[in-house]
Length: 92
Figure 1 (cartoon, helix red, strand yellow):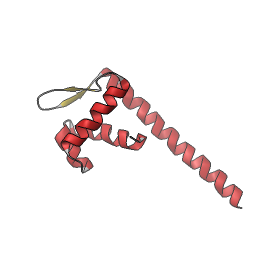
Figure 2: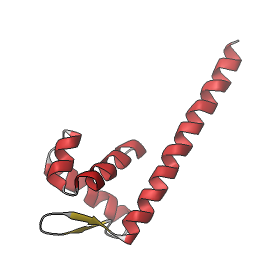
Figure 3: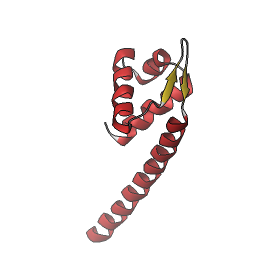
Figure 4: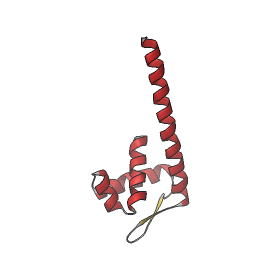
C-alpha cells in the first residue's frame, strides 16, 4: 500500500472515529478498509487502533505511526519539488 493510501486510511479513521464512516469517506467498503488496517497492523506488529463497540480509538503505537506517516508525507513533497527543480534545470 502506498504512503498516501496509508495516510488517507489513517486520517479517515481518526477523523470519523469508526470504520463504517471512514470507509464511506474513502469510497471503499468497510470490510476492505478493515482488511487494509489489519494488514498495516500486521506489518508493524501491533494494533494501531483499539476497537470498541461503536468507535475506534488510536493506541500509543498508532499515534507514533501517524507522526511518522506525516513526516514521510512531508519528505515526499520535498523530494518531488527537488526532483522537479532538477528536471527543469536540465531542460533549460
